[in-house]
Length: 304
Length: 335
Image (cartoon, rainbow over all chains, first blue to last red; front, top):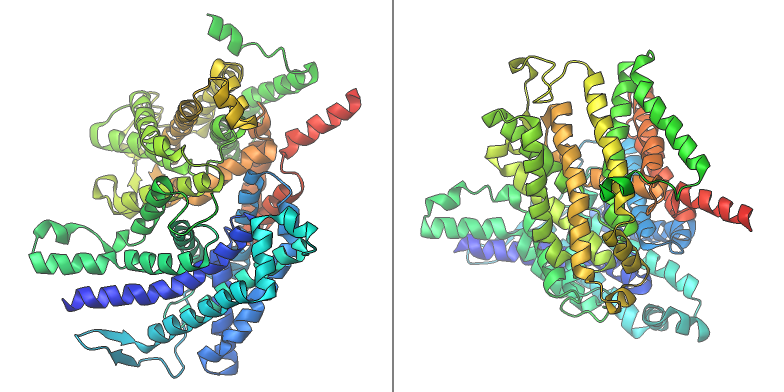
């Protein structure tokens, strides 16, 4: 029973962080209907930023979040004005391949600068502490904090999108770009802002993830695909949808733990032989496939 | 008979195109006679293989306008079928290749049928997702060697073995794939003016209108997807015999899928010569950059940075590819 509860709990915690990862992708897609393949690489940039800021200055890793946010915001803006602006004029195949090119570009620059080895953070007040949640569930403090701060960041972005003038302008651009332009909204700047917010939120997530996950230049694609799955499940363009979908996908990544629980409980031999941990992320991809085929709109989506 | 005549009929291309194509074909035929390095030969074989991949992608992605980023899974199916059958049961290439094609086509129907209800981004990402699912399964499946992959050991056979396609010299491989290359061009030339080809182009222009004209849009897409699959799986089988060492990581990776789509787009998607031009530019560029900058200068990843830069520039500024530029220039001349 312990295994089941702790897997479910771990799934929910990681799900909150993943929701923040997917949020940026969701905003960018919602506002300008472009799928950003480089999203996982933005996350990687956030992770490296958090890692090196913490290591170079020796400060508490959690205090690097603002630095990561600024770096991500600037990265998003630069990508938009330097590249995406030209890309969106072209057909869809060019957009897909173009952002894929951006992904390769960022990944290999990271490879050139940082090398291919895994790097991880080993200091800070949270390291090696854990909470006993009762019922045999022990949660590392890093994960708990990351999940909590992700929810805070998520809430902040939600407030920005729904309670401020800028957020309203962004939503208007998302709903009807031409109409928004007639109403005097600078849609070009709104697009850039969407990239800035998207980049900023995902690099915050990166700086949180680096507390309990090692970073290397090749890790981006996995997170890109997870973010796609979350966005598809929650509905393209829906912010609350992304949160619930994040939790669901977080639980999906914990399927091996749940499988272990059933293996021990019912003592089936054949269940032991399935290499479940190697197939950990296959379920996410499969979930994406099933979601888009069965319900392309997602759970909360308003864009078809 | 009619089909063959149609396949050989290139009369709608301008004469200058045909002259250039003829010269290139002649060069390809006599290339092995000239002195060349082993590296140049390997690059040429890669070029021919990727042209075929690109032609396959071009049927569904270029003429049909469906952005498919999951072609690598069919490379994997073809390669694994051939390798497994050769290693376990000593089945020659010429039998295992059509069987691999059948497997690939069946798989393409299984996933293509639900997939083609989707459009645009959803379709593109779903094809990636299926590739990754298949790759993950192959990485844990012991029967096909799991993550270690399979190795065809050439010692067991006496080269040159034309049945099993095990050779010592690359020249034999070169001529085999060159034969497939010419057949592929003829097939695409027939395809683009077949009933299905015309249906597909009308679907690309406007799906609703195509539907209202009585075209079964969904079925036409699924059929074309199967054709593209057959092309890719054929070259996958060849890849198994040529490389002799296949792993899920290099036969089914996303990078391969993207490279296939990119080549067709660079040359000009939806044209007969586009994928060949794209492969002719990108493949030598890629392998020589890797050789010079990656291996000799010692900067890891710089070749891929340049390659990524090329992708970005093309997709931002000339998304219709080189063939698009050629056609633009021609139109301007005519008017």
